[in-house]
Length: 311
Picture 1 (cartoon, rainbow, N blue to C red):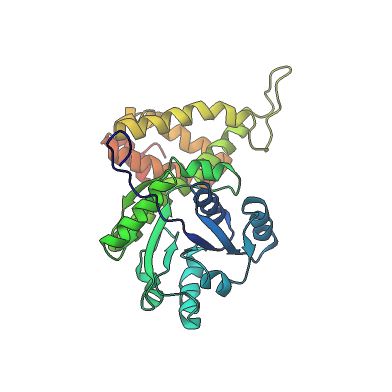
Picture 2: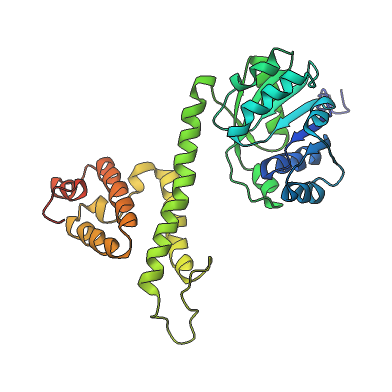
């Protein structure tokens, strides 16, 4: 108890951390954990890029083979691609290098703790802790973790308490995802984030065609380099649209589909077809889904379904 009569909570235990591997996610988590007092003693790195990332972001950590990283830590983080996780876990279990009592965390969004079963049988505490964030491999990744939610899955309430504590400690927000809901959770995140990249890339490509060769005197030329005129034109609109839908839901929908303007949508499909039929097909599919949400008029639905006279 301190001088103000408040009971002092014990400080969180300092953990020795091992990371497999030194990719974008692994190094971001490593830096975040070190900032709150944990020690990343070692990490595994195979490619030249991973080795360079380890030297830059975790300079005090030793780069060791996977089995040595796994054998000498309290907290083992498996930050590998989804397709490699099962094989890595089975390999570690077969060699018996992970000590009983080790907290083993994987960062895959698609998997729960079931994939860690071979190690769980050896007495480890299995956790799935997935940061719902995209990573670039630079310092801003660790900053972004402080504002990210983490999908956590554990085998029991003790595991959930450990996962929650780790996430809160680095500034994130833990969100419980049950084992059976991990695939659906992952599908939602992939649908929103990955498809947003494709959608915006298509929109920027079309804008470049619409604006190219018409630059005003002294204006930057419209080219194919990222961060150019087309991106500046669409950025405020995209930013406002994303903010609006996250705050207001589907009611944020605007534009010709929301208005039921069949003529405008038919024109869009025609001019997009001239630029790239694949972009036109993407526009049609997303417009149809938007029209379904908005309860669009039959004429517009016919055009989008390919049965209307506006084709």
